[in-house]
Length: 112
Image 1: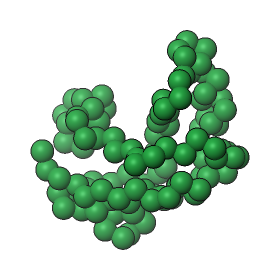
Image 2: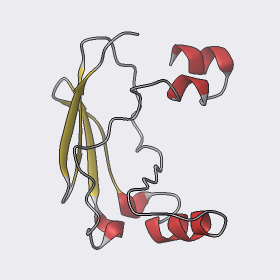
Image 3: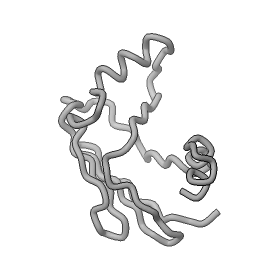
Image 4: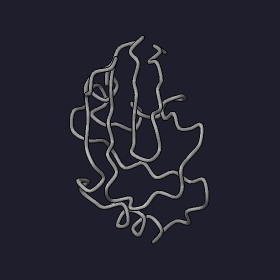
């Protein structure tokens, strides 16, 4: 968050190489998308938890908006933001993101 605070804007702070780990596979057959639980843990402690139903804009609404001006192709990923509870992480922290029906992605934070 150092750059976010310095710049007053998030683009540069969230755009470095390695900053959006996905995979090893993307699940494409989830239904319903509106009721998925999302949990983020840092070093085993739940820092964020929420449901897609609680998003400001629903999944279908987001896809409808995006496809009004761009074509989504198989393999494209739509990122929607984050549940409340954002907090600072440090080099060495283990971050785990779990989504119902998909599984858990775990990555260790590494200083640039």
